[in-house]
Amino acid sequence: MSNYRESAERIVEAVGGKENIAAATHCVTRLRFALKDESKVDKEALENIDSVKGSFSTNGQFQVVIGQGLVDKVYKEMAAATGIGELSKEEVKAAASEKMNPLQRAIKTLADIFIPILPAIVTAGLLMGINNIMTAPDIFYTGKSFIDVHPGWADLANIINMIANTAFVFLPGLIGWSAVNRFGGSPLLGMVLGLMLVHPDLLNAWGYGSTDKVPVWNLFGLEIEKVGYQGQVLPVLAASYVLARIEIFLRKRIPDSIQLLTVAPIALLITGFLSFIAIGPVTFTIGGWITDGVVSIFDAVPALGGLIYGGLYAPLVITGMHHTFLAVDLQLIGSIGGTFLWPMVALSNIAQGSASLAMFFLNKNEKVKGLAATSSLSAFLGVTEPAMFGVNLRFKYPFIAAVIGSALGGMFITIKGVIAPSIGVGGLPAFFSILSENWGSFFIGMAIVLVVPFVLTFLFGKFRKAE
Image 1 (cartoon, rainbow, N blue to C red):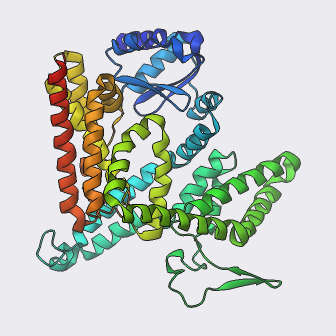
Image 2: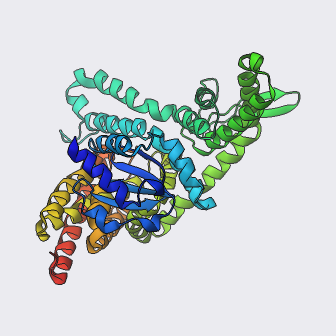
């Protein structure tokens, strides 16, 4: 306990003291500060604290990487020792957003919406991977799948597939819950809105292009297509914003005594009509344009697209802009049945872990060696912050080596057309979320990002005589 207290006090001192902290909270691995003046941070003092594995600033927050399981203990001691109240992430984000420009606020908004539902999506991706292993041919038996040879397992695979697909079938419900909550409305109304957009009475969005006749509602001469928005992102995002604005407007003007009977029905009715009349069709078309644009770029020059995205993903993580591509991934999955972007994310994570592992063998400092070993393992399992911010960016050349390896790996798997039908764990277990027919190419891509960053980091380090 005294070690945690000492670490907490030294961290507070290194970030400029209690008077420089506007707000503070923590996530799974990091302390998150909204600081009044980030120029007062003593980076060198931070790096000399044993419990600190790195630090960085993004989206108006200064974040200190502590590690899973330890960060909450350090935070509690910091709150007890300094009197800093335990605030929610939303309160800290609100304090930090005051210093953001419009682009940063837009990126932060997307992150706030999609990060809460990410565990459900990743879990679904892993379960879909297990189902794919059981049902895909040529994995265990030539020309046959596991359940073809062992039919008694077929129903188990079917149940796993049903559980896995739930998060994607009802994705608008998850997004609606998170988005309306982010926009200041009632999250349960957001969930109802999202589920309304995938109601069984509606024509499934995946069958929209193949049907001969689209069913319609006839409202006094106005024909409205009865089309659902399964797997779509933009319609529910826009509708959620409208619902939250309407709900907030009504709550300010309707007496408390009758709000329960009036606010939700009016807000949902208005938003529902607007969603099917205007919001849905317009955003569905825009989403199609975005999908077609991304696909056409990678179809035209797959090598260049893979090289650029594979190389830029890690730098995007530093800025926080990588969160915007989660929406693109989900849009691609809903529109074309898979994403070619997420496999490059998985390779980027592995590349960061490989570069960090090279620093374990290269560096003579015991603290750096220990940090490099543990953070590389974390990156190989999909959590890159300790490796990226604690090791690779600190020494710079490991980060550059990881980016080079990631770019080469991304180029290769893009040329080979590697597709992920879902999003899973972005590290070595990522192959579970890759189509089995693409495993060979993906494993070669994994070999590239394991070998190239390690070798380049080692050579750069020897050249620079790293210690």
